[in-house]
Amino acid sequence: MIASHKSSATLYHAPFTCSFAVRLAAKWGEVPLEIISTPLGKMARDDFTAHNPLAQVSTLILPDGTILTETSACLMWVQTHSQNPDFKRTPDHADYFQMLRWIGFCATELHKQLLRIVFYDEATEDVKDNFRHLSLSRLELLNNHLEGRSALIGDTYSAADAYLIWFLTLAPKAGVKFTPFGALSAYFDSAQSDESLQYLLTEDAKRRASLKA
Ligand SMILES: N[C@@H](CCC(=O)N[C@@H](CS)C(=O)NCC(=O)O)C(=O)O
Image (cartoon, rainbow, N blue to C red; front, side, top):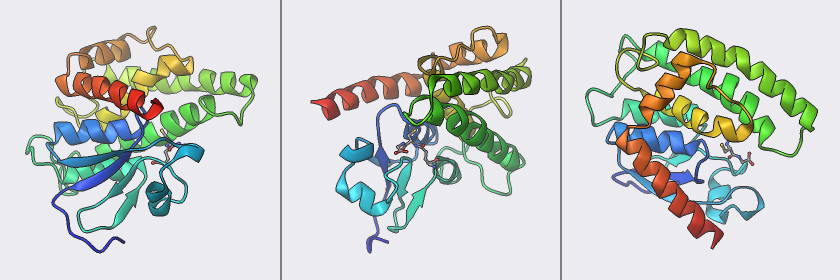
């Protein structure tokens, strides 16, 4: 714990990784976040690994100095602390557990089950292909759920949508095409007109370039 009180939380962020979802949710929820860009792996910043010895994003330093890790928990924190009343969800909200459900789904069935395998060196190409194949049943489930819907829960985006939209942004780079799933494709196409998403994609491209420089 850092002995300090700040007005905003600080997010360790690696461009285009899962902490992108936390930033997107924070933009929608008008939650101010101070961003510290860091590479991952051996190049990670020392202050980052001091807070999170696994050197994984998402890692959030809360205003009271406590550390919150796990993208799911960071997303829930952002949603609960939203300044935007339409976005805010606290545990007494009717949608709260559906939001937990879809955040958990994105974390365990999509993010860690696919991207954590495909983008890393530990697995062979055959193993990666097995996981790409496995992801199709997850995408089909999402497709069926999104039929006739514009968001995962209700009519407006929640933190769960931030996680899913981030995943769908990276899915083609992981060798997973979701274009055969009409409702899922339409959901992602419609997300492209979201100004916060476009702003952060452009911003991350700049952050990535400056980390590489
Ligand atoms: N369990 C963590 C880790 C998520 C995760 O795999 N993050 C990736 C980026 S999307 C990462 O930090 N990778 C670096 C590493 O695992 O060494 C969470 O959900 O926040």
